[in-house]
Length: 111
Length: 117
Image 1 (cartoon, rainbow over the protein chains, first blue to last red):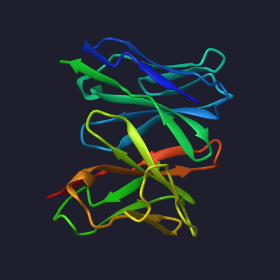
Image 2 (image 1 turned 120 degrees about the horizontal axis):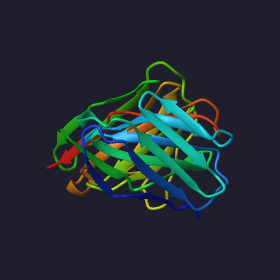
Image 3 (image 1 turned 30 degrees about the vertical axis):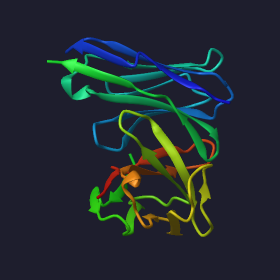
C-alpha cells in the first residue's frame, strides 16, 4: 500500500525566502507525481506534473524534483510571496484511476 | 492549464431534499472524472470514479444509492446527493484527467460546499 507523507505539516516564513516542501512515498513504482496548491475553501490547482522518467519540472518560481529510487519529491519555491500562502499537496497514482494524496503542507508567507 | 468547472460553488438545502452538483471539463474531453469529499483540515477522500457511458465505481463505504453519479458525456459528470441529511454536509470536489491513464494530469474543480439544515 502506497503511503504519501508531507513534511513539514505547516511552515511560516518571511516574504522573499526560498523554501522547500517535501513529499515522500513508499512505493517507487509510480507513473508520475503531481503537486497542487489549495486555497481555503477552494479546489486544487495543478502546479507541476513530473512523469516517472523525468527528474524535475519548472514553472516560474516553482521547481519540483523527483527521485523515484529514494521515494522523494521536493517542491522548491523561490523568492516566496504572500500570495504563495496556501496548502500544498502532492499526489501519486496508485493505479490508473486512484491517487494517493499527502496530507499537505500549510504555507504562510508573512509580508 | 485545462479548466474544470464545478457548479454550484455552495448550496444550502433542507434535510430530505436532493442536491445535484455538476462537474464540467471546459476545454478537453474526459472519459474519467473523480469525485472527492473533503472534511475540514483533512485531505481528499475519493468517493467514486465516474466513467463516461458506464456505471461509476464507488469506494468502499460510499453508498451508491445516496451519492448518484452520472457521466453522460465526455465533458459532464454529475453527483446527486439524495435525501440529504446534516451529516452529508461537506466540501465536494471533482477532478478530471487530461491525457492518458498512466501519464495524464489531474485538474480539479473549484469545489462545492454543501450545507444540509
